[in-house]
Length: 309
Image (cartoon, rainbow, N blue to C red):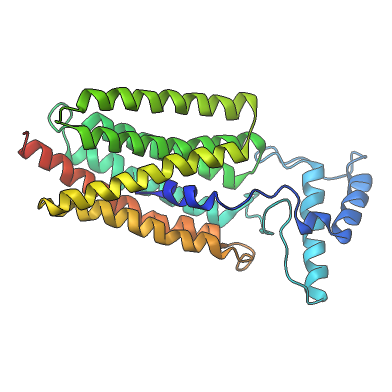
């Protein structure tokens, strides 16, 4: 079980649109002066084309650090700016640690997930092969957008990061529904239920992308679907373990570890060396989870192959 469970619970944290930093008088005064001097003439800051840092963006970045210096000189606590802690850019990347750790999660899902399943499972032979391969691709896509978003936080990259994350929640819940009902009298019903949640996911994504980026609505959907996903996988694991399917401990462990990693996100401290914050550590911790989760997937697929009834 991967990043999405952490995301579900962390969404209980309220979205902040105005922070103490960007309301501080030093920041406001600096920003107004910088924009007037540097953004009204051709001699001001030039836009960085790769990450699209405009002149007002550069002013906000410079003034943020002036405000941080002022706070430190007066022995005041470091505060957030526009809902984020101050981060030092690296090669123009906005949050270098979270970006790097998102890439590591992407690679982890590729090597321990997609590549591992391609090497150990056979299409048309192992049951639910297509389902798990699709889940791998959805995971990889989610981490691609996480990487893009942390490299450069813009409205569009934020929306696609949210959609990528919630796609994991829906995908794993749908996998849970199908797996629970597989080879039971409820198998056909599970396909209908899965189709309903897939259509709802499409509507949810359309709403966020084209109608309104509603943080409260998105949080509610994440929490409800996510909690159902966690509860169902855990109960299924306990049920199967009691029947002697020992390998399902990997499924339960993935869920338990991921829930434990939420504590890193809730620490919410100012960045170490202006680079690593609690959110980055959370992403670092989740790198190991695909190794455990996909070993469960392989074991479960082999079990279904050996015992078709």
